[in-house]
Amino acid sequence: YATWWIRQTIERAIMNQTRTIRLPIHIIKEMNIYLKKARELSQELDREASAEEVAEVTGKPVEVIEKMFNMHTENVSSLDVAVSKDSDQQVLDTVVDQGAKEPTDILQSEEVRENLTEWLELLSDKQREVISRRFGVRGYHPSTLEQVAAEMGVTRERVRQIQMNALKSLRSILENEGMSASVLLH
Image (cartoon, rainbow, N blue to C red; front, side, top):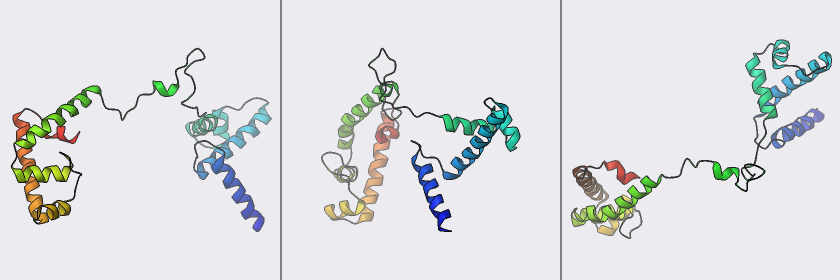
């Protein structure tokens, strides 16, 4: 009985640690079944067995067998490798960063930042103070409603009301300038 548990632990350790990208155990076991059938067929036929032949023997669809074979032969490449033998450029340098902002977005956000001070000046003193403290602008760190309420000596609800009115005013200011309120979110 203990032998079975030891064997299972060793098998699982091998399955979990041999691949660069870990696959679930049940996938590896299924892949091993198909690979074993392929090896047996190859010995019988004295040539490499095709995915169609393995599918016929196992009773599984050809697509499943091909998918398992592809997973088995898939190579993991480093992004630090050179694009070609003649080039010093790495693969990583050619991959597009999906999270990177477009230059136009950066310019727009800088423009918004510059205009924000101007827009805040159009609000009342209390509204300007609440927005500045809540969202961390004009030298403040972002604060919760409770923190702003304690610092200003008013209730949390009053801070929320002032904030809502200020945001409504900012929205109309932006609309008057032909901008969407979403520019403040970027």
